[in-house]
Each structure stands twice: as structure tokens, then as C-alpha cells.
Image 1 (cartoon, rainbow, N blue to C red):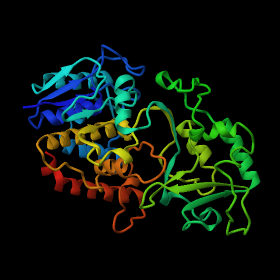
Image 2: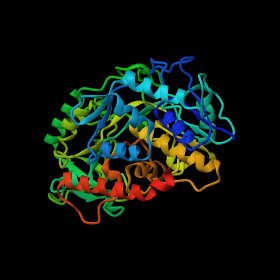
Image 3: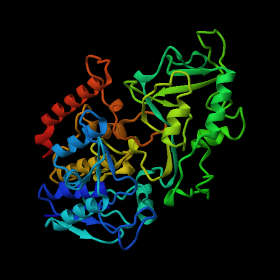
Length: 443
């Protein structure tokens, strides 16, 4: 039987290879370590955890916990490894990172249908293939991918925070578009001069997240202290440091807007734009940032209406190789112009350890289905795995950015539940029920 190729031995690649082999199809898995290491990797082991050893919240009523439970029910290799090497971490699932990698490596090397090759791949092979080479993909392989996809590759990526719509205090905001164009498409958070001055002072003085290793330089030669980024993704705190009015004449310009409470144009305005069709998520327009997460919560909480905002994704800034997935990938993780080629992991636009692994699972399952000439699997949008794959393939905005598991990407329940804990429990219950209906198609 002709084998399926998987490129990359990280979390997504290991899950993809495992799912393929467990369905009786031989796999050629390529991992460039230890022949070559990226700036972020240190160990020759597979499924190496780079930063934290936490796999986020464990309880099923959380977005991260729901994602992991869905993975368990689909037969995840890495969830099994995590369960065998977990360490105390309160309500989170944390692991002994060396043992986690050892267990994953041992499982892959011990699977008869997986042939592991320790060498770098610089060209995309023919036949059914899963590319899970990670967000630091470079060299010949990156060039090949760019030719196929025309994707945005290898540059500093600064993303704006996203908040839950229901957590915005609308008594402090108003819905409108500039000059009345559109149908009140934006939520506007107005500031008077005093509020604006205080905000700028705190913004400029806030603590920024350090950039390490592969994140410490950009294509334009910046340093970790003063990274040079494209003007289009300038961090808001960097722009604010250029002058007291820099952001008031930039992303916080109030022109074309009238505060209905005062009848006048505000001194400055922060605009929130819907991140999804259901309008359950809103991003802070122009607020790309490299502030530490705690500082984002503190400083952006000064924005009228956002004092108690629930951040579904904090702003981030890092070198990140990812595709313009909504334009090139389908929700089964296959390339639209070359359906036998699948992508998985962070390069697709999913953000996080388990999100990457989950995308690898689905890409591996679908690679086998493609190999057998069967219809590929797209999980319901009510499941976390399904919602993530639909997000990366169906995002309709202008500036696609990576997304991790969060309840904001799930469609709301038919009946709104005011209590957040109960609502999240309801969303999790529905997700697992809907996943159960698809298990037979996935296994």
C-alpha cells in the first residue's frame, strides 16, 4: 500500500502520523532534528514543548478542557501521553515536558506502520501529504509553500486582542459607522481628553513582553528591545510613543463619529469590529500589541466599556509562519488547489499546543479518507475542533490572525444563559453530544 507522507515531528505531525497509522495506512514521517534545529528547539525528541509545560485548563466546562476532551474521544496519542506524565497544576493539565516528549517519541518509533526519517525536507513530495512543519518553517520548504499558497510567511505578526461581545458594557459605548456608512458596524468606545491622556500615559509605560530567540529579529533587522515591524502591524504602544496625539490621529481618530449621549464628537475613540458572523467576538481595531497579558487586561480595561471585558485572545507579537488559510484551505485542512495536500499545526492559523495537535488529528484522518477516495470529515461547528477548522477556512475579515480555543467561536445556544459557568457547561455538553454523532465517521 502506498504510504502517506507527514512532514514535521511536532505535536501536529505526531498526531497526524498516529491517526494515519491507526487506520492501517503506512506513514513516512520526516523530522529534521537532530540533523538541524530551529532557533526555538533544543531537544531531539518528537512533540517538543517549546514554552510552557501547561496544556491549559482541564475542566470540560472550559474551552481548552473541551478541546482536550474531544481529542480524547477521537483517540489522541498526545492526550494519552499527557495523562501519563501530568504534574500538579491546580485546574490545568500540565506535564513533565521531557517525559511527554519521550512518551510521544517512543510511541511513534514503536508503531510498525510509521517509518521515521531524521532529515530535513526542502521539497513537497507528490501523493497524499500532511505538512506540519511549524511556525518557524523556512528555507526551501517555506519557498515551496509560498509558491503554492502565496501565503504570508516568516515575519513579525502583531495581533490585536479579541473580547467577548457579552462582556462589553454598552452603557459606555455606542454602535455606529463613520459618517453613518454601513449599519452601525462598529462598537465605539469614546474618550474625553482627560481619559485619553491617562490612557496614553499608561499605554506607553506598560510592560512589554520580551522577544526571545527566533522572535528577537524581524525581516527588517529589529532587536528584541525595538523590533522593526511593517507599518501595517505597528504595535499600538510603539505608535503611542511617537507622540501624545499619534494614536488619536491613527486608530483612535474620532472623525465621522458623534457620541449620542453628548451630541458631540469625542476626543478619541476605540473602535471594536465584529470578528465573526455571529458577532459574539469583537477585536480592538488597530490595537496590535506586544504588551504582557496582564498589562493588556489592566491598560485596555481603561477603555470605556471594557473595564470587565473578557479577553478571548490577547494581543501577541512574534515571528510566525502561517498561511492565509481562509483563502487557500478548506475546513478539512486540505489545500483547495491541490486536495491531496494537507496542512496542520500553527501554520494553518490555530494557536496553542492542543489546538495544533487537534488540527493534526483531523488532517491525518482526512489524509486517509483522501487516500481511499472517501469524503473527508469536517466536524460540526458546535464542537471546538470543528469550530477551529471552520474559523481558519471561513474567516471573512481582511486581516486573518491565528486563533486558539475559545467559546466565542462556537454558535450560541438556542436559549441564552446569563450565568457564564452554566452557559459554558451548556456549550460543552452540546459539543460532546454532537461529536458523539460523528465518532463513527471519524474512527
